[in-house]
Length: 225
Image (tube, rainbow, N blue to C red):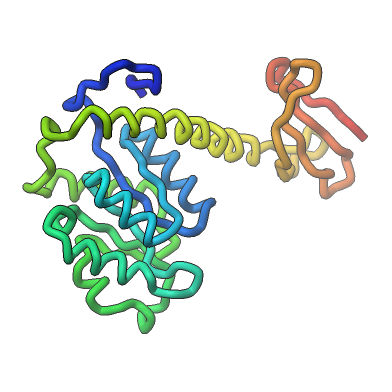
């Protein structure tokens, strides 16, 4: 991102589109969030309908992506209704992504969504939907009215989101490692440092080759047992 939390002023018109993600599954939230950030969006994450409503009112995002089943309840439907009831949020493009069965999806939630998708939804498909809505929307906010204070808060949140996105990407990259003994996939555990050297640690090889870690700087495997 060209803007950092240490910036003294943020050019408001230079801000990228803001996407509000409302999803109670943290892994899904992180996956979509890091993918959209890589594509150049600001991402405001939320794990609850109530928190999502507060963020939507404060930030007026360009697009909202939300589930409608939180811990088994269709609370997201109430979230959508609350957005539709407010003049300042009802025109924000809305994407609903849910794993609820059809008979559990409230009719008005489906009708009020600009895009309705079923889980699992690839992140690339979600990105395409967001871009289509942004191109199609004729009622985006005039960014010249956004105050610098709000932009600064977004910049401060960005550093945490970028760090989390980097961690998720590292986890995905590491999870594709193959055992140096037999070539079978190794299950990644964590990343850590010993003596200033950064290692990726994996579980025992299922074929019995041993227990390994990977020296990232030296790009070499180390057999622990």
